[in-house]
Image (tube, rainbow, N blue to C red; front, side, top):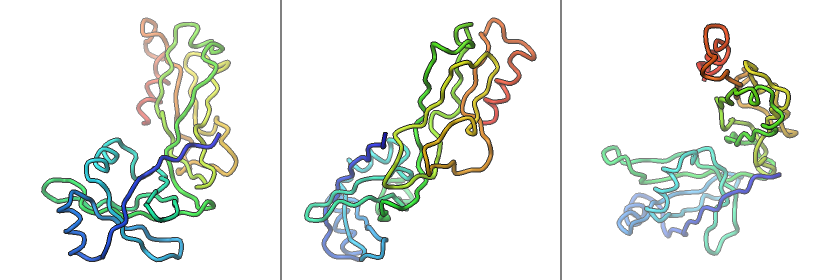
Length: 207
């Protein structure tokens, strides 16, 4: 299932240069620019409060957006820079790069755990310890997976799930080569001691 691409609404911005940018800020806007894909750069601006809310929500720099500007075709973009006021730490300019459907991009993708009821380790009172609820992957802009799936069936207390244990969608790969830990099945707290919790502790410490 393809991941839904969130909309990002902007307004066209008249003029360019520092004077036009200052005017936009006086009007409660954050000036920005869209470039790339062998096309001319386009000046845009955002409502300050709405943009600040989205920036503070997290993952803004690694999220692919569907940029909507009145009078222009929608375009897929990824943020490539946020300039902030050095004193107030608030956005004063933002840059976006256009992406084609075939472009490769690094994005954080949600991890979905299934078959909890078929996991012997959980049935015995173990706990699923999620080390990475999201994994950064290299994906194609036109075919972004909604999530990756980790099957817990047959896993016992002490078992660890690594990225190489997960079947990734075709054309998708991790951004790093190391076989990192995604989650593990930890022993019930009453039984944890010495060797029983060693592997789980090591897996958690890896993150």
